[in-house]
Amino acid sequence: MTAHLIRGPLDASTTPRYTEPSTFARLPRLDEVPSAAVKIIGIPFDSGVSYRPGARFGPGHIRASSKLLRPYNPALDVAPFDVQQVADAGDIAVNPFDIVEALATVEHAATDLTADGARLLTLGGDHTLALPLLRAVHKERGKIAVLHFDAHLDTWDTYFGAPFTHGTPFRRASEEGLIDMERSMHVGIRGPLYGKADLEADGVLGFQIVRSDDYQFDGVRSIIERIHRRMAGGPVYLSIDIDVLDPAHAPGTGTPEAGGMTSRELLNTLRGLVGLDIVGADIVEVAPAYDHAEITGIAAAHVGYELLSVLAANRVS
Ligand SMILES: N=C(N)NCCCC(=O)O
Ligand SMILES: [Zn+2]
Ligand SMILES: [Zn+2]
Image (cartoon, rainbow, N blue to C red; front, side):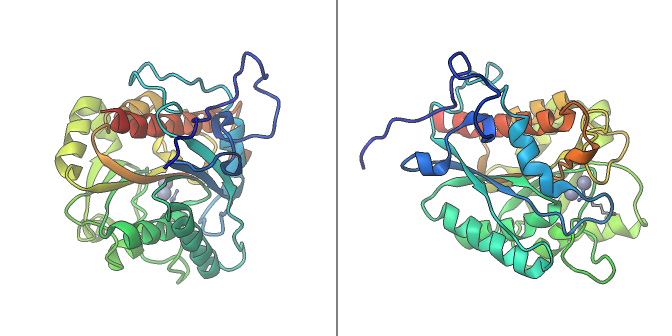
């Protein structure tokens, strides 16, 4: 194999940040590099939402909010764009009027983009997308442990009889045998449910729950330990619904719930994932119409940056 020079972000000291069309962190586009170990894709899809629409504009907003990121991450002592080629693969065009067709398009695109062994970081889009992304990962890797950050369980059964919505992806994934039921977790759960039965049903689908309140009572360190205890020893898929953050930290989302995590708690938890075999990730539910001053976009951009840093740190060690 020929060694290629890794291309990182544009240099902000010679090309101002606010020039050029947006790519994540001002990285090169996939067609500008020979290959990439990590590909960032946008999926502008929100036909699965139950409340406020608008997450279809999430990918563009996260990219636009990611321009200030810098190349060195002191928290993990790693330069995430130096040790691996990361590139922005643009958006996948999906049918907004036919959810089943949209899910098939996403699954095939994810399969194609990872055929060369690349890992995907997906920018949503609503949480319905986790299902086709897990289907694609499962084809490659078999049963996968899911680490799901969210205010919501997203293991409800149907809405208006519809099986594929942003409130149901992890029930479908569990029913389809995609997830490792001994090693999956929800983190950040809070807020009112439809009934106590929601939690009982969730329990048999293979998830353990870390509640948002556990952050206050137990702290970040103990939660990182719980995650490692449950998830080490096999591949992990990370799905991050931005509404896991408190609405003060992420107002730009479709189904906000009070009492959430701070962005500092989330970023520190993500840094604690170094050592886990993360095979793919998504950041979903960013809905810019309800955002202010890019608060949510910036949080999502930093979440993506920490994930890329964890992948880089895993590669270095
Ligand atoms: N996946 C997200 N963000 N929300 C699910 C909420 C489903 C409901 O309306 O009860
Ligand atoms: Zn949610
Ligand atoms: Zn969700």
